[in-house]
Length: 129
Image 1 (cartoon, rainbow, N blue to C red):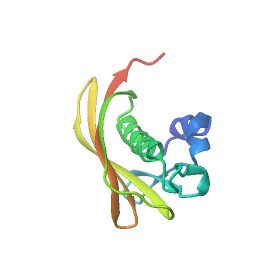
Image 2 (image 1 turned 90 degrees about the vertical axis):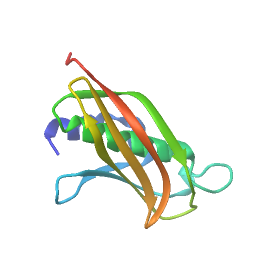
Image 3 (image 1 turned 45 degrees about the horizontal axis):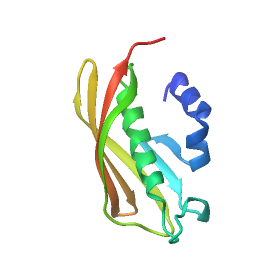
Image 4 (image 1 turned 180 degrees about the vertical axis):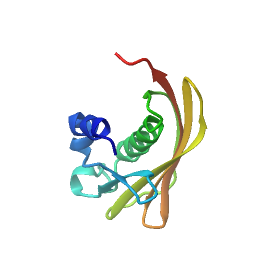
């Protein structure tokens, strides 16, 4: 992870509030993790869907950023499949198409071997400020 990427994550107070960590595996791919705690439960005692979506969006954006550009989420299609009340959540993203101004990635959020949610995220690469 570059210093710029680490700095962006440290500055993102929403990601910190959600308890999400962005990590890098030995192959250089990013993944996001979060512990399920009562603070991330919905009123039914299971993970709030917003956390699952945020993890998928974050890891997709970080993966899109690896190409040296500045992505912002343009669109997404996300499906909630299951849910849990405890455990460690992990989100991973893989590129579908990495274009010059638009990138499309597919993300999955799991708890162990259980697939909880998946979706497709489209990013627009904005110009640097």
